[in-house]
Length: 481
Ligand code: C5P
Image (cartoon, rainbow, N blue to C red):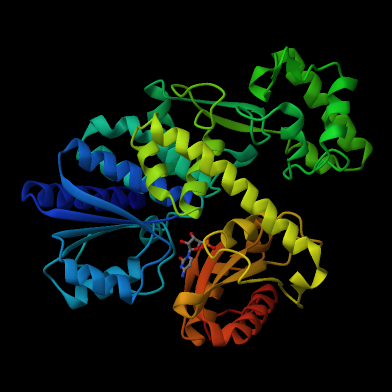
C-alpha cells in the first residue's frame, strides 16, 4: 500500500461521510442495505450506530444480493438516501441511471465488475490498488466513514475487526490482520477495547470445552484428534491437563501459561510423529480479544463473534446480529446464542447429508461440485462451501456448491478455494462473474471466495464453464476472452 493510494482512499471516505451528514441535516430518510454475512452485518451495525447517534431517520435491511427487484422497490419507496454496504456497487450505477432524486453511497470491498459512473461516493479499496480481500473489509470501510462522521464512533473499531475476521482477512503471517485492518486494530487497542496476542489459535477459545475445541479443529488438522472427542480427552489426560474444574468444563482461555505451553509442545510432537511438521506452525497465531466483552461468551473472541454474526445472517435473523453490533447485550445476545446453536445443528445436518452419498460431491477435471439443490438452504450454502474446502481430497481444486432458490427460479452458487490456488492465478470472483454473465446470471466476489446467481435451467452450462475457466486460469491462460 502506497501513501498516495491511502490518501485517495481516505479522500473517498471523507466524501462519503460528508454526503451522509448532508442527508441527515436535511432530515432525509436513509435506507441502509447490507450483505448477510458477518462482514455485512458488522458494517450495518457500525453505520446503524453512527446514524442512531446522530438521531437520523433510517432503516437497515440485510439482503443476500441486490437485484432489479430491489432497485424497483427502492424507486417506489423513494428514500432520500440509500447506503449500500458490502454489496451493490454495480446496482448503485443502475439506481443512479434511473433516478437522480435519490442520493447513493456505496461502502464496499468487492472487486468491481464495471466502471463506476463517478457521480456518487463509492468507497472501495480496489479503486486505489488496495487489496479488499486482505487489507480491509466492508466493516472496516464503514468504520472509517463512521469515525470521520464523529470520533465518538471509534468505539466501534472492534466490530470492524470482527467483520474482517469474518471475511477471513487474517492472511498475514500467523493469521494476523494487516494493511488498513492493522490501523483499525490499533484504534481499538489504544482505547483498551482489544488485545492482540499470539496464542494457541483453535476456534472456540472462550466458549468451548478444550477437548471439543481440539476435536473440532480443521486448521490445523490433527489426525486422530480432529473429529474425535474421546481421543482428545485422552490426549489431555496424557499430559495432565484437567478438562474440568468441578462441574464446569474449562475452555482454552482458562489454561495457565504453563498448561498452554505443555499442550502446544505435546501437539507439536504428536504432529511431528505423524509426519505433519508443516501443520505445527498452524498451532499458534494472532488472537483478537474484545477486552470489554464478558469472558466465556462468543463476543469475547473476534473469530467466535464473527461466526455468531454469520449465523444470524444465514439463519434469517440478521437484525439480531445488527443489534448486537450496535451494543445490545440483553435480549439480542440471548437470542443470538440460540441462533448460533441452531446454525451449528443445521450445518451438521447438511454436512452429514453430503457425506452420506459419494455422488453428492462430484469431482470434475478442475473443480468439485456439491449438488445441494433443494436440500441445502441457499443462505447457508456459502458456509458449507467454506467448511468443505479445507477437507477436500485434492485441496488445490476449487469447490462450487449450489442450492435452489425455487421461488425465484434461480440457483445460488458459492465457490471457495485456498490461497495457494489463488497464487497460481485462479480468481474465483472473475470466474463467477464471467460464467454467470454467459448464463444470464450475476456473479462476483473475491479470488478465494465468490458467488453467483444463475437461472435454474443453466446450471449444467454454468458448472461446465466454471470447470473450463478454472482449468484455463491454472494453465496460465488470461481470462476475459
Ligand atoms: O454468497 P457467498 O458467501 O458464496 O459469496 C462469497 C463472496 O462473493 C461474498 O463476498 C459475496 O458478497 C460475493 N458475491 C458477489 N456477487 C455475487 C455473489 C457473491 O460479489 N453475485
